[in-house]
Image (tube, protein in one colour):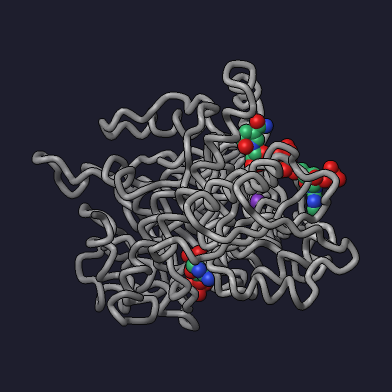
Length: 502
Ligand SMILES: NC(=O)C1=CN([C@@H]2O[C@H](COP(=O)(O)OP(=O)(O)OC[C@H]3O[C@@H](n4cnc5c(N)ncnc54)[C@H](OP(=O)(O)O)[C@@H]3O)[C@@H](O)[C@H]2O)[C@@H](O)CC1
Ligand SMILES: Nc1ncnc2c1ncn2[C@@H]1O[C@H](COP(=O)(O)OP(=O)(O)O)[C@@H](O)[C@H]1O
Ligand SMILES: [K+]
């Protein structure tokens, strides 16, 4: 499990560490780590290579200056570009100068003239120390112009603590109506004192370095497969991201005494004459996620059983037999009959995952959800952006994390917002960010497979936030394998779901 923290949580740990060790010690540890990452990733020998530092007025700039001093001692030519020359970190600046680094004061009105752009283009490494923990997006115009110029450089791009331009708490990059937000395009981010939640969303490669100011990670999951312990560990921090090892803990193989009923059955209500494929795709997601048994209840029973003969099919939920969780919505249509079906399933006590057309209907009938919440029934919503907006029209998506958390808190449902980084939040604020996946998942029907996967895990009794998080992780890993195998299309996911559990 990767645990992540708010800026305030990191700051609290930082205060304790500064009192104990002094801020110069912490900065030395942080900047040594940045220099090491740069040195490891550049082609050797290092003498003759060059690094450019983007330096803001805070301690983030101080880290970059000290890292530059260390790199200079290893033979690199180092140039610091100062956005606010009179406020650059004095000790860091002195250290760089002592080491023989070059310093350029930028013109605030035109921070990236042709010579600066040429320097950036020819550098082997660019180190972003413009802003870190203290900043909120969007970047101010001078910083944005410098970052935009740096982003065009082919150099190795290393962000200090955070890529400048993202919100540490949410990964947001600024209001949507502000035009294209500028963010440092880091190849790798070296972060200190714990991963910030915004990084889970907005940074790809990360190196998290302990510098003696780590927040308390809370109770660790004990590796016994207890989902409750796992959920408690997730609830104790601001957000988590799951790993392959977590999946092994959360989705154990069936025990020797298992039978097809042991771990819960999922019932699937999906598909319609207009969208028969959604039923087959969704059911396939469930069949390939766990052994046991899958029930299908809907208009496409013939098509489903033709592709999945192991599925027990019925014409509708009232005659389907017992299940431990329902999935309803993919391709079911939005007419009156579909609405009645949804209302009927939502009246049941088992956990219900609502997806796709089911969400569109829910947007028109919000009371169906509030009635479930009021009587304590578990609901999981899995919208993409447009579906999210139908159900929660007043929640802007320029900050996806806050939107998802607000939706969950307000509705009493667990909400999974799909995207490049899928976010799951439950009504109590426990948050899982999914970091597996491939843009090859952006294909019609891949969400139908996802709801089948998650429904299967919900029926197995995982808490909704972990069923959704583990399902998104597994689906993402399967998507990566589809891509690596040179395959395409949503049904290609089926054959990779089993092997995606490594
Ligand atoms: N304390 C320690 O011992 C340790 C700290 N560490 C390091 O310190 C970092 C935190 O440093 P920090 O608190 O100095 O703030 P930081 O992130 O550099 O930003 C402040 C500057 O940003 C500016 N600015 C703000 N918003 C902006 C915007 N939108 N667009 C553009 N600029 C904007 C703001 O300008 P101002 O408002 O003052 O005019 C000010 O100049 C942390 O991330 C880690 O790297 C580590 O070394 C470990 C030990
Ligand atoms: N650019 C992307 N990178 C990674 N995953 C993506 C990307 N775009 C979409 N996905 C994933 O693909 C799936 C698409 O689901 P959805 O939009 O519901 O598709 P459909 O309705 O066609 O089934 C989701 O799991 C989503 O997270
Ligand atoms: K930075």
